[in-house]
Length: 76
Image (cartoon, rainbow, N blue to C red; front, top):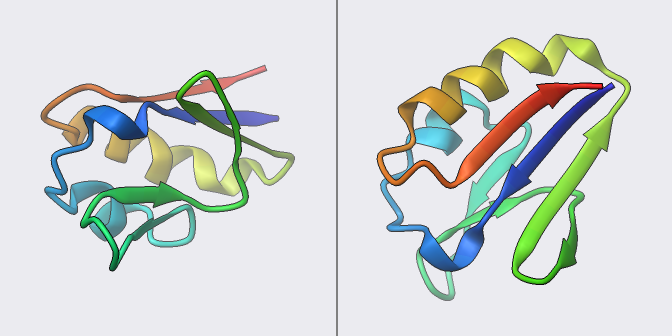
């Protein structure tokens, strides 16, 4: 199981996550910040869980590329 978390309020809209993991991230046309697709929100953190382990590499790349370090990716 892959768990990806995004702290959206701190997003600067650099678009790296969308370029590296377009199946998981998308840019909002309303405010220019990233959206973690299929996520649930709790206290400002958006989290998605996926049984598809093939997304792990792309999400880890997005985590490393994020200049403000607001994305986490882990296996559980």
